[in-house]
Image (tube, one colour):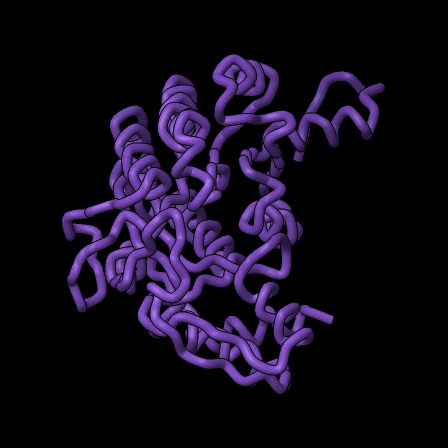
Length: 312
């Protein structure tokens, strides 16, 4: 209820006051896969005001622009989905990659800390790169290779050092019905060709971006209902869908679930050389995030079917 001594107050004024009293969540990287999924699920959370900022109005390489955005908008929680993600181009576009993934992430964390705003920052499984053959825990020593992986790891340090309310989520093999990704590439190629070669010696787990967005909103809900504080929650967490797959397995599942007749042949990674080396094994243990925030994580094939059902 809103009480006022001014009997002539307009209903529109009351609405504006109500909107301002709601907590606002800033989504950076709004045009990316995860950002778009947040746009979809935001309709389910009427108790929050969502601010969606793409690179055109919130560029992590532009510290002055970010500072102005914070000055012009009221923000209670920030979810950083923005990053330089061109893994192979990063090997030559080093300055651009550093500007966004390291310096930009650090500046964003500092801006949030200045106003006591909690920050949820998205990182990558690429920080895990070794001969280990059991699922990686957050306590395992990272060994990033390649500019993209190294800058994302350095960005994690910047975020955690500059914001005491920061939650870093490492995720892997992200796909969505939005943007460009492996699933959509396979659907296109499967419609064009009778057979494909796909690597079988890179092991991990896919992540449906919609599941990750929902998990993040559950994390926020746990804190907002005082089940845990942001300071207690601060740290690094792994998140992907449950289960294990190779890219070969992933491709076969896409064609099977979509009813596409395309033969998939398993090949080694060295038959598809890339500028940046990919982790051979980046399967992640999600026990910590599940226990801390009481999360249930869907199996990757179930989520893949859910996504494919959204496709024409």
